[in-house]
Amino acid sequence: MITCESCGTSSVLRDQAFETAGSGGEMLDAPSLIRLGQSIVVRSLDLMPVGHARFSYGRGWWDEFWCIDGYGEGHWLSADEGDYALERDLSRDHWPKSFRPRLGAETEILGQSFTISEAETASSIAVRGEFPEELEVGEAHLYFDLSGENSAMATYEKWDGGEAWSIGQWVDPWDVTLS
Amino acid sequence: MNEAADQTHSLNCTQCGAGLDVLGGGRVKTHICSYCGAELDAQDDYKVIQQFRDMKRPDTPFDLGMTGQLWGVEFTIIGTMAWTEYYEDKRWTWVDHQVYSPTHGYGWLTVDKGYVTYTRKTREIPSPPFISNSTIEHNESRPLVKFQGETFQYFSSGTASPTFIEGEFNYRPSLDDSVRYVELMGSSRMLDIVQSGREREYEVTELPDQAALLSSFGVATNRRPRQKGTHPLENLVRSSLQLFTRNVALIGAAVAVVLGIGLSAKGEQIARSGQTAVSSEITLPFEVTDDTGLTEITIEANANNSWAWFETELTDAEDEPVAAFERGIEYYSGSDWKEGSRKARTRLTLPTGTYTLYLSMTEAKVDWTGGRLATNMSVTVRQGVAQVMWVFGAATFLGLIGFLFLGQRFLHHQSRWSGSDWSDD
Image (cartoon, rainbow over all chains, first blue to last red; front, top):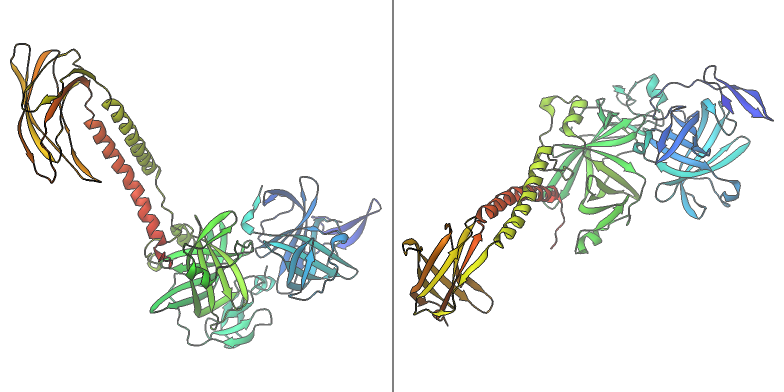
C-alpha cells in the first residue's frame, strides 16, 4: 500500500497494478523524533521510515512507522508519548496456541513468557507513505500489548477481517537518534 | 499525543469549576485540581475520583506549565508531588514534578537538598531484580545489581508517602500511597527499585547541569534552591589546567624519585680504612681526581644500643687543615624494631689533590638495656658523589601536589556517599 504525501490518496498494489484505496486522512503536524524519509538509528540499527500511520484512541493518538533496514527487512516502530517499540511481524507458525485476550493473561511466544499489560481500541486516522499491508482510515483495531522480561514486548492486533501478531522490544526514547 | 489538549488546552474542574490548564499528553490518567484538591479522571470526562484536603504546598522552584530543556529535549512541568519519609526520629522531604515531552514521554524532576535530578522509568530489569530488607540487613557488604552492563551499589532504602499532589499524572496517585524504594548508585546515574503495592518499577536518575536546567526552565534567581552538601551523582569535574597540573606533579615526582635513586648510585670509592679499634686514631690518605661531584666521607662503628661521637680533621698535601667536623653514631634495636644508624655521612666539595683524613672517637655511652659500646670503627671515602637532596626535595614537593589532588578526589568520594544509609557494622 502507498499513500501520496501531496494529495493523501492511498493506492494498493494488487496483481502488479495500483488500485485507488481511498483517502489517507489528515496527518496533523506534531513533535516527533521520526520523519518519513529521514533515516534514524534505533539501538544501532539503521532504519529508513517509509510509512507513517496514526491511530487514535479518543483522548490521544500514537504513531506507527513502517521502516526498512539496510537489508531490506521491514520493522514496525511505534511512538506513543515517549514509549517506543520496535517490532517485526510474527509468522503464523509462531502465534501462541492458547491466547486469551484479557489484561493480566499470560502466554508464551518463541519460548518466552509474556503478560498482557495494555489493551486498547484504536482507529487509524491518517496514513502516509508505503506499508506492507492495506490500512484503511477509520478502521477500528483492537490492540493488546504484552510485556516480557528485559524490555521484550509483543502485540496482538485484531480488526474486522483480520488479526496479526508482532514481537520486538521496548526502546528507550533516548536511544532513537537521527543517523 | 493529546488530541484534546491540542484543541482545548484547558478545562474547568468538575468539582469547583476552577480553570485548569491541560499540559500533558493523551496518556495522562488523572488531573488534581490546584484549587480544590479534587482528583479528576482524565480518561473518563474528568469525573471526580476522590478529594484531597489539607495539603501543605511544598517549597519548590518549579510551577506547573514551566517548560525547559533537558539534554536538548523540551519538557513541561505538568504535576507536583511532595514526599515525606520518616525513620526513627528523622524526617526527609523532597518534591517530585511530573514532566512531559511529546517525544520523550513522562518523567520526573526531583528537587532534593537543593539539587534537581531527572528520573525516568526503564523497562529493563536489573539482576537481581529486587533487594529485600533482609538482604540489606544481613549482607556483609553493599548489595550490588547489574544493569545495562554496569554495576550499581546499594545506596539507601526507605518508605515514603506523598503529602501534596497537584496537576497531571500518567498514573493515579493518592495521599494514601506508600512507596518502598531501594536506591543504588552507578558511576553517573542511580537506579531505583520502586515498589508500590504489588507493582514494581525501575527508574533511572541522572543529574543534569544545574545552572543550565534552572535557566532553561526560567527559574528566577531568587527561587533557585540552595544546595546542601554534595549530591551522590555530582562528579568531580577538573579543568584541563587542573588535570595538567596533577599529571605533571605526579609524573614529575616519579621522575625525580627515579633520578634521585640513579644519582645516589653515582660515585667511586677512592679510599677505605680497615676496621680499627676505637681507642686508636685512623689516618687515611686519599687523592681526589674528580671534582665534578662531591666527596663523601662515611664513618662506620659497631655501636649497639649506645652512641659514639667522632672528630674528623682533613688536611691537604701541605698538611694544612682543609676541614674539621664532628659526627655522632647512635644505634638502638629490639626484637622487632631498630632506630638510628651505624653510619654517619658527610659530603664536601674538594678540589682535586691529595688529602689526609684523621678520625678518632671522642666520647661514647651505653644508654639502653643490653647496650654495648662501639669497639671498632672504619671510614670510607668516595668521590664524584651527586648531591641528591634537591632531587628528593623536588620529588616530595611535586608528590605533595599530586596527592593533594588525589586527596581531594577521596574527600569528594566520601562526600558523595555520605548520604548512604549503609553501615559496614
